[in-house]
Structures are given as C-alpha cells and as structure tokens.
Length: 171
Image (cartoon, rainbow, N blue to C red; front, side, top):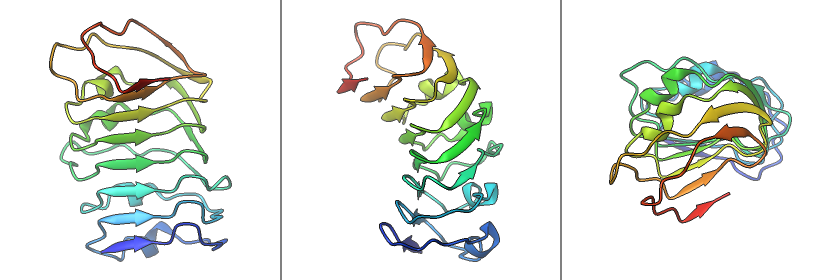
C-alpha cells in the first residue's frame, strides 16, 4: 500500500494508530501537508514500511523510536524541516536497508551514533542545522562505503574524511 498525500493542505491530526491499520503500508509520503500532531513512534515500526517522508511540516513533532534489531525494511527516512527532537538512538544503526537518512533542520541533540555512517547501504545523509548534535566521523574502510552525500553544516561533528572516499557532495 502506498499513501501519498504530499503538498496537500490537510491541517490533519491523525493518530499513529490509524496509520498502522494499513497492514501492508510500504510508502508513506506526507511531505508539506501542514500536519500538526505529535508523530507516533509506532509508524516507524510498521514492518513493511520502506519509505517515510514527513518533511516540511513545521508543526509536527516527535522523537525517533528504539529500532528492533530485526527491522530491515526502512530504506528512506526524511524528517527535515520538522520539530523532531531528542537524541538519535544507537539502534538506528540496525536499519541495515537504510539508503537515505534526512534529519536536517530539526532539533536533535546529543551524540550521533557513529555506527550509522558505517551502514554499507547508506548513500545519503543530511543532518545540517541541528546545532546541538555532536559526533565523530569514523574511519571508513576502503571500498566499504556507499555514501555519496553527507551534509553536516551547523552541527558539531569532528573527524577526517579519508582521501579514498568518492563523495558526490559534502556540505
């Protein structure tokens, strides 16, 4: 099941419970819908969900859940331009199918789990404008990274990018 409601002026307050009633939900696109609710952690844990975009809903808030080790379906997460906050749990690194992680322009803080960068399927990560988010870039083993895009502007990350990484863009 694909639920695509992007760019609709929904001003919608929907519970996580109503969305998990879609037992085969694969794609949830709520980009720029003027949502104003607290996003339910249970939505992240829908076993079939691969694509989640709630970006540019500047009144939606929430935190990331603890992800179970067996969760491998999420490939795309975009929470950019929302009021999501809190620490990013270490268990986010359990999302081994994750290719895109966009958490830019939110209110995340604390230590970013370095192990997320080492996910062999991760291609794009944007964390910019989370000024209280800290972290260290890992040493990337030769040939092990699929990363093509990293954006860390307005965060407090440290570390070195090794010469052999071939990034499409670094911001």
